[in-house]
Length: 399
Image 1 (tube, rainbow, N blue to C red):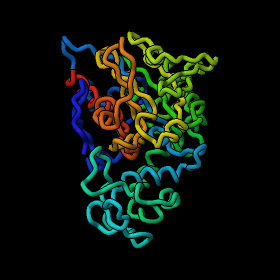
Image 2 (cartoon, rainbow, N blue to C red; image 1 turned 180 degrees about the vertical axis):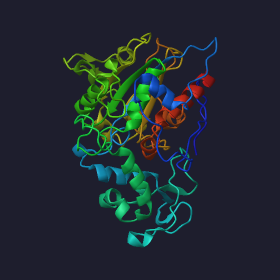
Image 3 (cartoon, rainbow, N blue to C red; image 1 turned 90 degrees about the horizontal axis):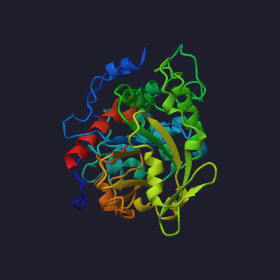
């Protein structure tokens, strides 16, 4: 149960589930420019406009591994193993009971499960009562990365849908920066569609790549290819402002007193968090989109038991109306003691930042944080856009 803590932005959110009807194929991607992208989207609404409302700069933080990237060779997970984990994390069983699915059906392992009814995957923020992801119940790594061969055989049809969406289109020239293995998208199409659509809508936004890994250079190469109009789903449409330069790649580290610093590629260290957030925000009045990357402090998070206050910082100034930060990460959990985003709050720019508690951080969901059940954006290329719209509505209402 979540404790109720009254904060300026606190609001219960809305969330879509896996069971929602979706077309067999996503809407067509860009076939002739940014305007075509906007026309293809059609559905995801932007926050409504009023005379009193000026849309703030969207600062969109995207985790990499299993949020926008499937497969983590540096972390030891192949593309297929990563997909197994992604499905496993949305397959719910009775708490502590890996033999019963959340809907009461028995878990049937192996080939005997082929053709049996598929228990719905659960992707909503709130967990079914008395249930938890089977991923948390399984103890051995092999049971997770081979989930679809063992207890999760029943979900193989879902796996095939995911694979279909991640395949590089047949007949399209392979772009190595965007298709590392020659078969699958390196970064999921929904990520690029989000950027293309916001650009087509002339939205003001800044993308912040957040990673605990060593994949920044690979993501930068993919963004460079996308910016040059080489992406198979946006071919010929250039996004020059989305090229991630080396000078925009920072290393984040916590200091012993719990404050956070950023180091740029030249070795210049910024320890004043007021200046850190200025670097993260960039020019809040900018019309054109922009992108930076932060390699976050994994060891600090691991050494502090994965507590939310030690994770990837998200800076929130309660009085600020010029920016709206939204953090997408698959490791945001509905658990006050275990999550990956370290929300740091101050009342005004004159105050120092201080970490929010785990319980307070939970209340940011659907306004400043979005847990990413990765099956959703793989299957629905508009998913990130829909979450942004929900966060904007909640942010505006909270004001």
